[in-house]
Length: 156
Image (cartoon, rainbow, N blue to C red; front, side, top):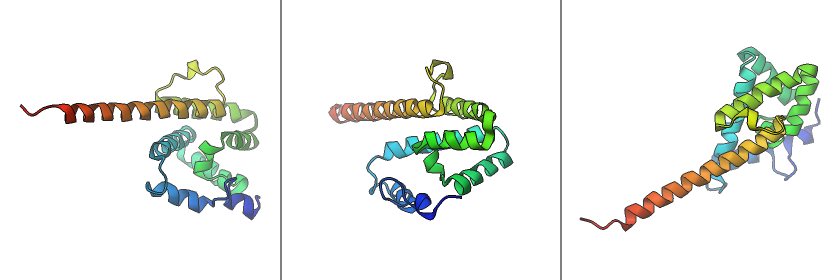
């Protein structure tokens, strides 16, 4: 069982509730793409667990929250802690569960799992975040280019 303080406050001193509120309010959090990326990764981790069955996934989430003080956001923000929790929960089966999550993340962001030099969960999440940031930048650049073309067209 975790202590009250370790569950409530993260390293920045914000409560889990504060972090969630800032993510719900795009004005309070200027990194909207980062939040979208984080949500994509969280959903991918959830899908990875769901491959084992919905009830198994629920038990995993319950244990992550109660035994390891990990909210869903923490799975992506602290992948090493997630990997350690999986090792405690699954023992030698951790590698299989990690592989399911890695495959789910790769599918979600359009990566080939074979291209990962180190297929660990932490490495995969770091690479996926970079891929999503690049995709978001490309989308912003394309939108700016289209807007620029639209604004520079002269009426005919």
